[in-house]
Amino acid sequence: MADVSFLFGQFLGGLTTAMFLFLIASGLSLVFGVMRVLNFAHGSFYMIGAYLAWQVAQWLGPMLHSFWLAALAAALGVALLGGLLERLLLRHIYGREELYQLLLTYALVLILGDAAKAIWGTHQLSVSRPPGLAGGIEMLGITLPVYNLFIMLIGAAIAVAGWLVLTRSPSGRMMRAAALDREMLGALGANVGVLYTGMFVISSFLAGLSGALVTPIQSIVPGMDVEIIVEAFIVVVIGGLGSFWGTFWGSVIYGQVLSFGILVLPGFSLFSVFALMAVILIVRPWGLFGRPLR
Amino acid sequence: MIWRKAGFAHRMPWTLAVFVVALAIPWIGSRYDTFLATQIAISALFAVSLNLLLGTTGLVSFGHVAYFGIGSYVCGILMKTYAVPFSVALPAAALGAALGALVFGFFCVRLTRIYFAMLTLAFSQIVWAICFKWNDVTGGDQGLPNVPYPDLDWMSAIPFLDELRVSDQFYVLTLVLVMVSLAAMQRIIASPFGRMLTTIRENPERAASIGLDVRRYELAAFVVAGGFAGIAGALFGIFNRGVFADYVYWPKSAEVMIMAILGGINHFWGPVVGAATLVLLNQEITSYTEYWPFVLGVILLVLLFAFPGGIAGGLAAGVAWLRRKRAERAGA
Image (cartoon, rainbow over all chains, first blue to last red; front, top):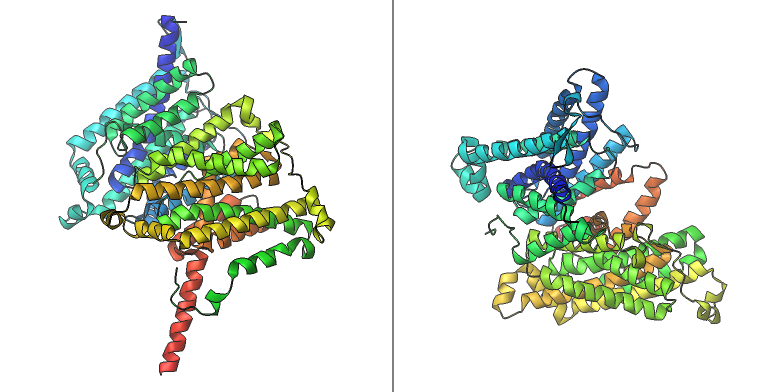
């Protein structure tokens, strides 16, 4: 049972899940941290990203770099969609009651979910792995697919890049300022509206990108949007709503709990992550790395 | 709620009027009408129970479906697996749901606003995960099909009722139970306890400063709302001839919330109107297109931007406008 290579395999599996979730949840966390909007539609952006990637890959056919181009195009397409929706709809509800914010983004879930169904149908779709990353690496007696390794690296890269942008760049400073006090930032002459749109575009880009990157290892099906958003919520809640590093560690914890929870309570690993979310909310509602709101 | 003028509209016993009209449906309508009416009655009870939190107490629960689901499963398991009569299973379902609400609510009311919504969502997903995976008891992803109808032989002894089909008799039973529940909730909201809940909604800090134990009141509201949701769930399981994990999945929480908002959360009957509208619209629209969620999403957008008060809020605003016009004309 306590075989090292087996446990290592579980650990790596958990880490892959974690980095995937981090890609998705980081955007959700950014938007919540700065705009205080819990975006249910983030999962829909992820799903649209997956479908767009499939679509572009179909158009491009067996071109050499079709997967990478498709992923990039999907992420950009979703970013554009996110920006549009923010401009047209979301900006009217900042500062309104949670109920209206939740329901507005839920309305987008319904609309985008059905739009995807109308465009791409209800069949399972899948994309093959990019040729360069098709193999596996032997490590401590287990085989790790290169693609999973690539995902882990991307996750780590996004984490470092996000941290650098947030703490070291002028725009990152603006984002943190907007998170602390929106009115004050506006009064100081910053264009908060543009900042918010920008944030939302980045967040949607990340959602679209993660949706595109998931296609080689998971098939694309309707319903993946409502499934993933709850997982992303859990990650963000564990780490702390609005805390960037919190989201990173939240995903790592989630991945490991899911991966090892299967060993302890087979069949109830789903239960264990929801229970973890509930416990964190009860003990530290602002999460492991977050700060209490006001 | 506006109770300033005790005019005809307010002296009219609305509950009774709605009851009498709804009761006549099996005799004047088709089998399909009764089917829809049953669905509306159950949804209405569910939506009003949510509104006890949403509208009356100002708590945004995004996991109300948990208590609906607990009620469904308790009643379904008791009636199907243990052949317990409905007269025992229904109160057990209500109690089970209320107990679940007590345990979860104990933690939830410690949080506010978005955290409250998240924790209610987390608990409802816990309930879902249990229902989905605990094969031995809940049937897992297969659910519990073929939950039996309650024994309705006693209705045959009652004139007029004896000529009805079983499904129509079940509708009559559902309607009576729903109406009694609604009347009970109306009494609760109008009681000093209910007024305290409204005070908490309007200003929790102030309520606390005049010596109100806000958490305890919120918890009480949570438990009451959970219990009534459990009744709705129990009825729905029988109506749908089965209990499935889908009932507890989180989008259902959003759906009942939409019913409440659509009708209007600031009026007791708002969620009832919302439930009826949504069920009828669903029937109407799904006969044209499979893209009902899309239509629902668009309705929701229009509602949020144009009619945040819902149908009841819109009507109230319309009536107020007419009154003002009339007063202006009388004054001129």
